[in-house]
Length: 142
Image (cartoon, rainbow, N blue to C red; front, side, top):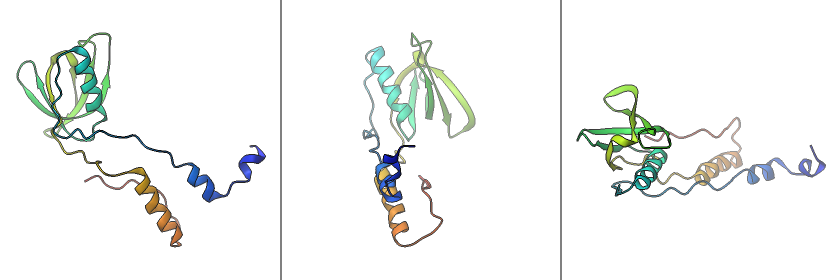
């Protein structure tokens, strides 16, 4: 460890560790136009990052209300898929991009308005008030 690093106080180090988070788009209620393969891929990438439910309508007409937690992109739509949970089934499910006709960002984004800076600020307030044995723990998202 270099001498440069050793001259910083713990408070300075904690301040330096705060990095800006990602800016999340407001997607609640959005129904993307899926006119092209790229449109579908981009919308599914946003669905993966979304922290709420998405309604997926298949080309067969079936509608699935899902929380998308994983995706795998392949060379073709048939080789690409999303993995999801549904409220009615506890097991993981998977569907090919090629089967998807429509997406709707239907569920509330449970993390909307909750910022990293606010979380760190609450920690620093508790620390300044003299609390001991505190740590950064995620708050419940509902």
